[in-house]
Length: 295
Ligand code: PLP
Image 1 (cartoon, protein in one colour):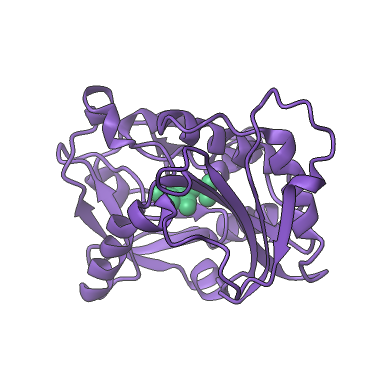
Image 2 (cartoon, rainbow, N blue to C red; image 1 turned 135 degrees about the horizontal axis):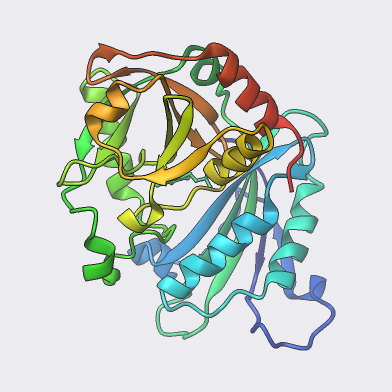
């Protein structure tokens, strides 16, 4: 992804009375070294992040992403983000996006430089990858065992399941494994057989006219796109629910999608080598909705 702009700042406390938030920020050429070599984000993947889709200069679902950033920070015992400061950073970066087309805004909150005891933060703007083929022709997925039962978040909260941490090496390894198996993407299953999520997306399926997605309590990220789609479907009078979903239920669904902020709704067309049912009209409707400005 070609980076267009970057801005860094020292995160301030939630009760910091400063009104000159712009004064806490520094813009950089995104090719210049912003992150110190001792930053724990680079050394340990110790931090949290968000990726927001942008349509023209409008960042989608800023409030939902900031709420999840705060949730991830809390799960990781990072200081609570000052959301006014993050909003100021976002507003200073989005103006550098092209007036039309799609971009990616990334918010990164790191535990900071080793030993300094203070978090570091930065925001980047990049051109979005072209997702047309995935949205229009769909993707082939393979199911992969994540190795945990669906109740593990309760038993082992230190695994940070449900936080969007910078440690995505496992997620990237799963995508590489999916490609080795001749697919485009993976869908994780819990070791007790329930559908969880894709490495960078949520799963939604339709059975008997009802749209279902796995429960976030099963140790998955609560997707902003999935939530936005559910509120859109609700406005159309369509029934939606969180549920425990087995691999067989996913395979025999009327239609299924992986959904995320940047790729948006990609219909699943094959699961573990078997063709699956799809709904081109609903896919087009979801992507039209997702590409409209959303707050
Ligand atoms: N699940 C995982 C593991 C993800 O990494 C992502 C997005 O990156 C999602 C789900 C979808 O989240 P969102 O719709 O907020 O992009």
